[in-house]
Amino acid sequence: MKILVTGGAGYIGSHTCVELLNKNYDVVVIDNLSNSSEESLKRVKNITSKSLSFYKADLLDKKEITAVFSDHKIDAVIHFAGLKAVGESVMIPLKYFHNNITGTLNLLEVMNDFNTKNIVFSSSATVYGNPASLPIKEGFPLSATNPYGRTKLMIEEILQDLYRSDKNWNIALLRYFNPVGAHESGKIGEDPFGIPNNLVPYISQVAVGALSQVSIFGNDYDTPDGTGVRDFIHVVDLALGHIKTLPKLFTNPGVMIYNLGTGLGYSVLEMIKGFEAASNKKIPYKITRRRPGDIAACWADPAKAKAELDWEANKTLIDMCKDTWNWQKKNPTGYQKTQ
Ligand code: NAD
Ligand code: WQD
Image 1 (cartoon, helix red, strand yellow):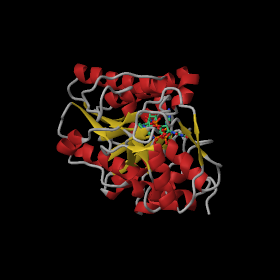
Image 2 (tube, rainbow, N blue to C red):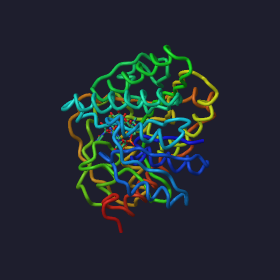
Image 3 (tube, rainbow, N blue to C red):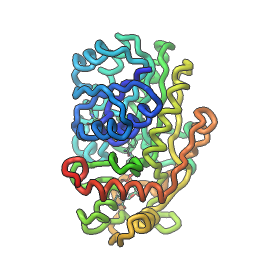
Image 4 (tube, rainbow, N blue to C red):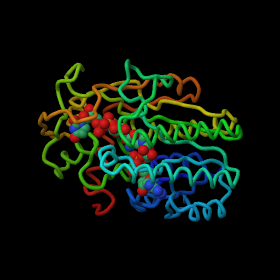
């Protein structure tokens, strides 16, 4: 079985490539490296002692996608490629709509041309907006609060329309909660360009001394300690969710939708404490104003994925913090300059 992984050099993509190779899938990666480095794929090969085919190609260029499908008979696509910074999407929405939507349309058109109609799409818990109750089930109402989230919602709808028009398509919409952590080898992990937007990469850069303190965006939420609560999920558990999805995709299920989360909520303060325990470092922090657009709490009901995919997250908060720290201390400046 040959799987095309778009965005495979990125954070979640590289971890998924490892698990695909471990399960003996053939792997082809397309990535334009706009938010990643080819070094991640070298390390994927090193971890697995297996090879993969890499194309530095842009989903905005249909000819480049066609060339990949001409070279390889692809059985299914796992589609990670996209821009993902919420704040940036508010500033430059057209870039997000163009990259994420047009890139996906190009990919789907080429898949259609080559009669490859199996796709797993990286959706996000952001499609639930501010949920009325917790935990979040797949049938909850959907809404978007920023252009990034809107691209996810629009792509989900495009894929559902595609299936309505042609029942030969098989589509998995995987709604990820908050991916964190790194491969236990410490060879691959999250390597954000510039100052991180997300909590755990920020904490980890404070721990390694690259940043001075964490700003906690509000401690007056209606949560047990007043700070935001999220369903943090280890990236390797998340990658394994894709591995469990593929066999089901090949049974012609039509459209499937799953939450990939742990079902547990941890607060910002609990994450800082967990990271202090894992790294044996003090993490200085200060309380600042709420970040516009943030919600108080969000966690998944992952029961559907457990029942239908036989998948559940197994790694703990301490695993997430330990593995992030292992990656960060071995690679204090990410993939660019390592020890
Ligand atoms: P990432 O930025 O590390 O990976 C995305 C990859 O896609 C990058 O390597 C980037 O270079 C590539 N890419 C972007 N546009 C491209 C294009 N036009 N052509 C080819 N390659 C392109 O992000 P990630 O955290 O690994 O996220 C993967 C997917 O999961 C994204 O679609 C993201 O929206 C989604 N997601 C991420 C999170 C999260 O918190 N990390 C949560 C929910 C959903
Ligand atoms: C988590 C908590 C912050 C940084 C984002 C996207 C979402 C999805 C996952 C892609 C919140 C607090 C954060 C900091 C802080 N991505 N925080 N100080 O916002 O839950 O989700 O990533 O689909 O769409 O919105 O993740 O890690 O940014 O924040 O206090 O420096 O940490 O307020 O409560 P978020 P996050």
